[in-house]
Length: 101
Image 1: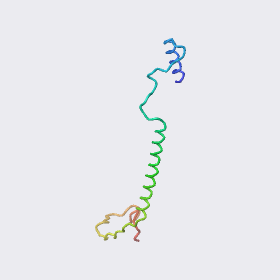
Image 2: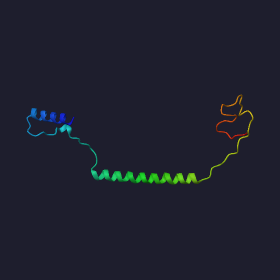
Image 3: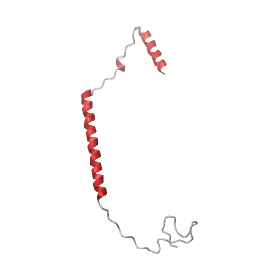
Image 4: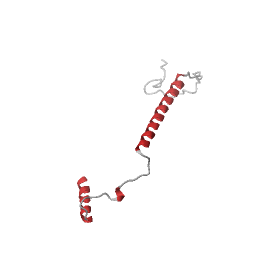
């Protein structure tokens, strides 16, 4: 792949009559952006914001998880909730229920 690119560049240089290949103006990328010092400052700013956000979320999670939570009473055992017309293949109780026999 690289050799094909080099050959293409050599061919175009020979056709144009130039002794040294030159970069065409279209291949140069120019952007209207800030200088490198501004990019470093911007990256530093967002790094600080990220660390502050991580610390804030961690503190809020610790505060929320350290609080107690209410325990609700068990619902009454209504007789119509566990109607079984036939036994399970593994026994009279379900797989995840407390055994009553």
